[in-house]
Image 1 (cartoon, rainbow, N blue to C red):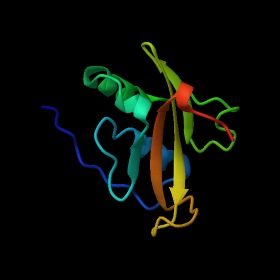
Image 2 (image 1 turned 180 degrees about the vertical axis):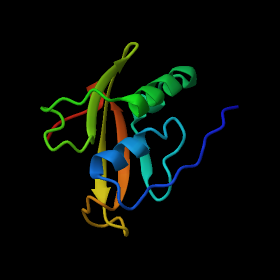
Image 3 (image 1 turned 60 degrees about the vertical axis):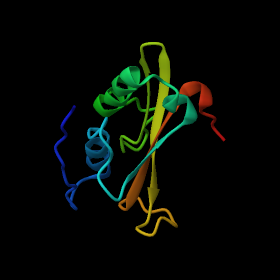
Image 4 (image 1 turned 45 degrees about the vertical axis):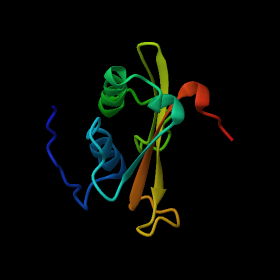
Length: 118
């Protein structure tokens, strides 16, 4: 059994620091009210390897300007073993209805093959 420290966000953190803080809580759940959205492909990974994928997303720090032009640390691509993984944050207001960068967040994690740019 793993034990996780419960950490709280500071209201004065930059967007990138807040995103790094939330990601670093993986493989545990994100602090409330933030949410974690795992795709079907990610959920199909065997549990022993899924922890490795979530830990790699949590530890990710290889931001490239093309993927992160505004330095928000809110998008990343990585490979964990045979899995090509893409993750990103969506931003919402406190009611989960509209966009607000300093509000609630959903961290999405997908296999790269499931990811489509529209």
